[in-house]
Image 1 (tube, one colour):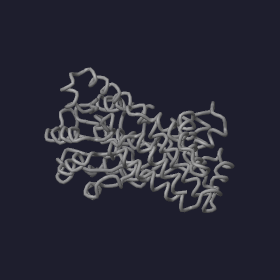
Image 2 (spheres, rainbow, N blue to C red):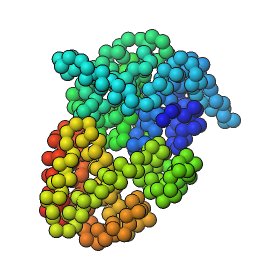
Image 3 (cartoon, rainbow, N blue to C red):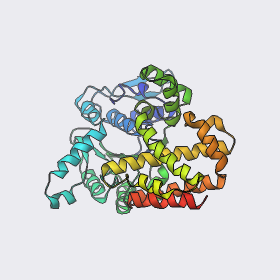
Image 4 (cartoon, helix red, strand yellow):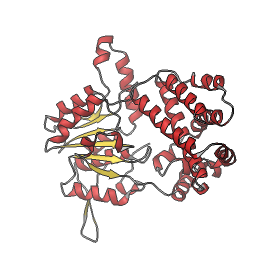
Length: 375
């Protein structure tokens, strides 16, 4: 998805973005910054736009009637176009991984995925296949931060996730404690709680707010007219207030993952059928495809458990999976609030284990067994 042409085209979080633009215009952008928000809220997009505003050769400004000056970007200069070329992060990561696979085995182990479309803007994504930010990536960031910018006013480092290996997180603290005067470090985080408290304490925190469901439905009606109204209603609720997530939502993939998640919940609500459960979890093997499927399953399961909690607590108007309301009401009547709460806590433990690179199919087997035993 291309970057918005101006900050005014970025959907939501207007006060936060105005504050950042004012800080850039006044030369007061924090050296260390956390952009927090749900998946699809536009954290990475905003990070690139901030980088363009800082590095833009033309430095355009908007003047408000209040006298406030807001930084912008031209989108056409050499700095802007090179930074904007990193918008399709997944495509660049896939190309970097493919290049690494062609290396000798000894070189492959030492090579980390880094994206650098501009010499003064380094992007650090989670390194496949574990999808964690690793020590080698942070060491490269620290090493490159020691050199002055070569073609732009500042050095900018964008870390696109909060999932760090322990050694990498500890290493990052060194540069956060004393960042160079010409450097800015931007961390994108779905859940800032994943970050070490010592990292959070050294960064300014900007939260990207959620858009109301009604606004998302209007946006989808405008941008996705080919979707059926019932699908737009469902996606608007599932997107959790994130415009980018709503516009790029893969409903077919979600419903497939949700079917497996429902199988887990049904197995706990009825007489346990471990054979069926284990056949399902066998499909979540190692590798990139298995990781993608597992992530989708856990997200779908989390949303279903939230819906069951809403029904159990008497707030059905907050339901996300509105197309499954009859079945969810039936399951809610069969499952206690205590069971749903325990299932949600167990899900958090599974997700934590995935970040520590535990075997996915074994973790899911164990979780499925816990669900049926705790009923």
